[in-house]
Length: 557
Image 1 (cartoon, rainbow, N blue to C red):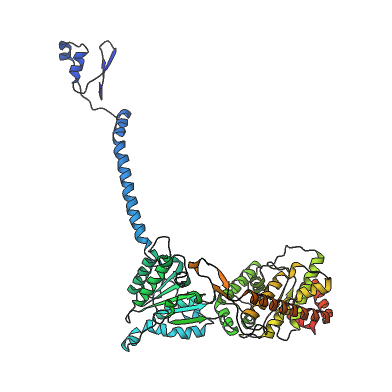
Image 2 (image 1 turned 135 degrees about the horizontal axis):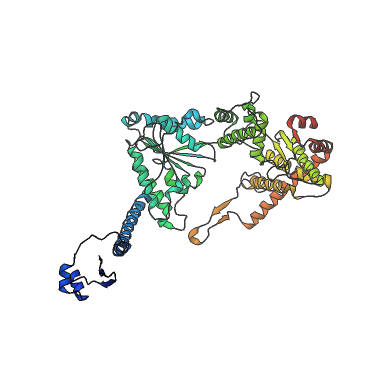
């Protein structure tokens, strides 16, 4: 029997022989070498059979093919990596904006609900200023036929949460145009030139989808004033800004693309961005007034089960200074509180607790303080309330509480009776005296001072400094303002330096100290003359912990 190059022989007597057959000789020659006679070989029956499966055969085959398979695998991986690397390099220079559209955009794969001006409340002036942009996107031929130069860019400025992004979506929704949304920080990468490449790609895609709206959020990330960085002309951010300026200059009168940018720091933008022909429309989104807040609350309370006793008009009056994002959060927090209390309707207590949670922080029910500290907190908050109540320019007291919220052991909540856009010197002085009323009550009642007035002192000092340095309320220093100037980075001065002398700095400190000492003396005089009302309010706080406005006015009567 032959097995590869191995020969095994069986004699007639049953014994076996074995040898290795050379590959260049036949089986008969191998038998002759072993001593078989020619006569025996003539009568020997020879039968040829195909060899069966053998692990030795398989192992030999694997040894033969293994190097070839290994080399092929390495070559395949190398080709895949080269292809992947080329794809990555191609994608780096492409922008990745979020594309929303009320109409059928060519590459829009996700259909989003259309946002219109009806969904944006409390910004009527901004809507009026943006109507011409909507009209151009819808009927651009009317402007082009008359040779009118359409606005290329609109800059929306305002504090955070006033609805700049929502307003930009509403412009696209009203015009039925694709909405390309991207953040200013997404243009800047670690690779040089990527930001400029992404700008070119974004504007190219917008032109293909025209009429379209490009929205750049937080444009101050790339649009800061040039020449003040350490990178000079090779700064990646400046190259990105230069490309934005070039692309906006490339818009013709027949290009139906509007660029809307949003920022809460318009003062740091490069002047080239704001010149005519680029962002030549500036829309300001202010904090909403009481009427606007009521409209915003109605928008955010749609579909929510409100208790019939909830008055959105009264709620709008209780939220001065709130922006759209704050009001949305207020409604959401009230709904969360109602769900935690297993209620089916959102009532006034939930809105009140949600407002206090946003303003002062969450209630800390587990904090236990000693009886003496609790009494000091009650007199401290009573001092604030009594002094503010007796100020001619003070706001009405809405609530006084000694329940700990956030970092405060207690709080006094004054609410203005109406919207205020201008403030007088006397109003500042009354507010500072009200902030120092808690410290005055501690000193008069307990003959000692504590750290409870730390935040009050910080706020009072900041108000006094603003009176002197920003508003010119100092009779000694006159009408001059005092501030900081940006240092020159090329001269090694990276910070800000005051624009006044050391002698003037001492005068400012003296004026601030004078304002604070005068206000503190006024607060102490009120506490001394209204000591009986102070004690009534403090005892009421120790009994029920929270005094609302009607009860407070009854105690002060």
